Length: 219
Image 1 (cartoon, rainbow, N blue to C red):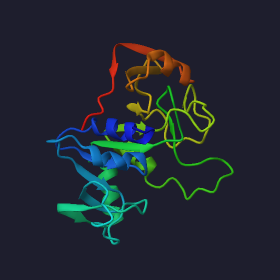
Image 2: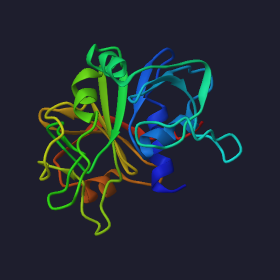
Image 3: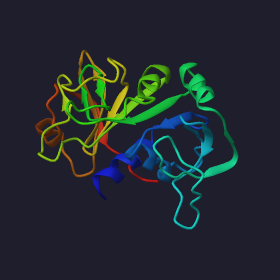
Image 4: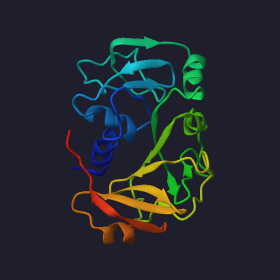
């Protein structure tokens, strides 16, 4: 199981029956493949759709259906489509129960940077800032370290923030964190990963929960 699948499978465990969920580009969207049986959620695309499912196969792909990142999606029975202003009224009105966004960096204060690297052309923040303050629960997902092996879970973000102090949870390929006393609270480790492995790979300060457990990656 690769890092992206670990993260996507664990993300899917965050949803409760009846939730309205917005999934960000990349790994968050992959989690739609792993929704637990019996858990029915309404997935929202910020470009104007409610009730879509797992990414389509080559056989079921409809080029007219895509999310805000241009990736194909599958509309389910009972789905609706509408204007982008209506979609953002849903987000800003507090009607999204959970949003999961990818991140470039996160830190122990619950900050997230997910839209710009200085000197690199970026299309803009998109709907991230609305989701980060409009959703009832905000989760960041990212691979724990970069290509150089350096932590992306930090004491303090170095990149421009998307929003401050907004995260409820961080999910990586190594661990699940919540927050306590301005530090990272380690709640779970990935299968085969020890607490010591997580501490060694993390720049931020960690409090280890007395109830730390292994991630459930079942479907």
